[in-house]
Length: 384
Image 1 (cartoon, rainbow, N blue to C red):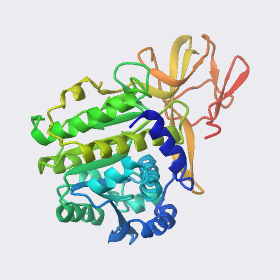
Image 2: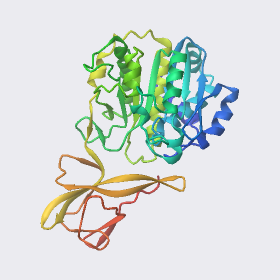
Image 3: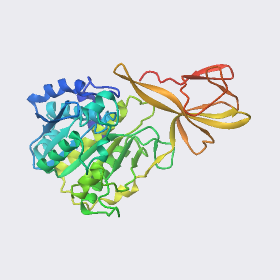
Image 4: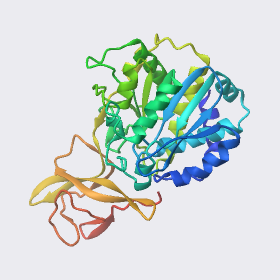
């Protein structure tokens, strides 16, 4: 598939009712209802607070693919991309789409953690990280996913997440807009045959992304943790792929990133539908740079603090306010930050920075604007 075709697909079939960062079950419920005439929609379990956990089954082919999104409730970008794909598969008559639907059966959990999604938290209602519950299976959501995995017996798994703005793709000043991982399945991080298959699919997705966001794709650290779902499923010899939706410049609503996730998933599904995946083409995976934590949302450079020139790093804290996510600027670090990058950078030119009329700068301070040389500069995100 060409980049032009993929972009046209997304422009045409993007689900307009889903946007920005706050996506709850209440918002996707009418979409599930809408797609009942196209796909099998099933309630497969309930969350801690009794909310429905649903699956959407797409296609009827022999190659079985399991995807789940919003295991962490505040990681919603991949959920938006899933419903963009649902529209595409429901409405498009393109030969590529027919090919995927005939070759694959795709089972998707759009929101695995509906309680966390509603509260916009990483954890579930019992304050448990579902991605550390793969062995104990202490939570109802974990049990639902495992039961589906055991019953469906997928050939491939896609574990869909979102990552913070702090990550760079390697040691450079470009953000990791999309990150991948073929999780380890043992402490030695052995490159097993099923990991090679996951790596092969990731390599294909990376090749496609490099045409649009060169050097903005990273790989997560593959330190083994059997409590993580991806590591557990990989240990059962099922090729499992982690996809993390990250930051694109000036895209705090994650609408551009959403398009790249849509393209990743469509590229992977098309590849699976028409390729016998052996894992022989796994080596390009190791050319993708590892994620580094080199970014802050804002860095104010060259600040005179008590006659010492330092930098001020600011990270946005995401808060749910009246069903909308607000980004609150918080001072994260005051130091020499020459080895770090800011998504936005402000040069104080060796002047003092005044916050709320005070010269005192401290980590953890919440600020909306700063005054430099008697000029106010807002730190609030606009038009997102």
